Image (cartoon, rainbow, N blue to C red):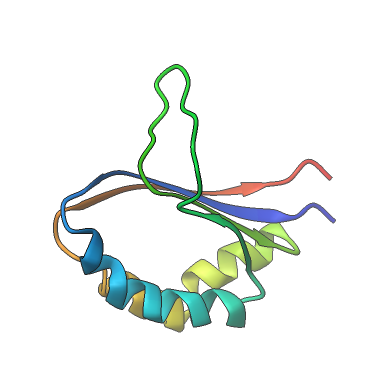
Length: 97
């Protein structure tokens, strides 16, 4: 079964400390949904139209599990804690195997 991944990039964050409340809720929601954070705010080398701001990669055992974790009540509560003034490109993608 192919794994599922959350891929998110934040092209604009006007208040990085404002993400603290989101992070406090999102981390346990991701874990409860079976997710494993593979990268979070690590070093980035951007090419082409790449963005060097915060990037996050989360792995799930399946695509369906990744979708269910996003739709979970716990993660929806975390989304409600995202501050004003942020911009995020968020995708759920299926692995190749």
